[in-house]
Length: 215
Image (cartoon, rainbow, N blue to C red; front, side, top):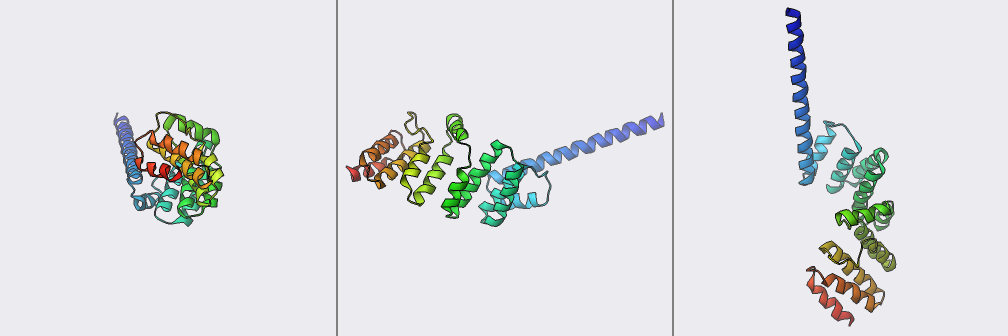
């Protein structure tokens, strides 16, 4: 009887310890996500460097992006490469987007374009349909604009439904940028068309001035 009681006590202690460990791990995970979403990137780097968490592709991507956000491009690229190797195709799209943004911020526009062109084209359309997410075509387009590749920029922006009705501010911005490209190409009618599409929202009423410039 005494042995049985001892075994039961040991089992209870083990279960209790496991539950405490799980609770602690969950709290650490929540704190990590909170630090990342609130921009405390130094804390994210510190936590992940301590290896308190299993290093999954998600964590590697979070670590890499935190390095990018703190200006450490070398370590950011290092961990993005590791994340890319460990990731699923869907997750790799997120990696290419974050990496492309980091390259753009470094003014490496050709590098940004190369990275963003790896992004699955069908996924861009699906993101636009489900989430109104136009950040990939926008980033790709403005990278081409920085190189004065106006036609290529227009083609990038076209990956979002530029002629859609119920536009939000992001889509209006893409229409304005498309108008800017056509203006640079000397195609006033097309520039005006896209400026007018941007005016159908509350976004940047000041672009009326751009229309006046080309009329």
